Image (cartoon, rainbow, N blue to C red; front, side):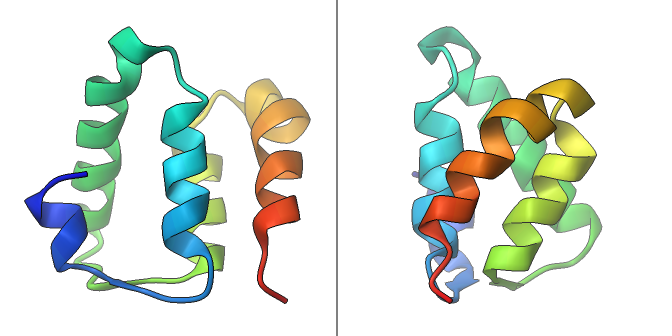
Length: 81
């Protein structure tokens, strides 16, 4: 993905979840989304990303209707527990 994301510690299926969110985004918005997620994680000084963190990022960054109706149900399928 990029150097920043590769430097994080990923727990459970969190990396697959984030990759799924990005893959589900139209290609011309993917770079913008990656940058927004990177800034979001840096602002919170995160070094470890778990599955709940991915859900929190979706809550904070995605339009509410989209998060509830499209993104979160798909991420729920990827949860490791």
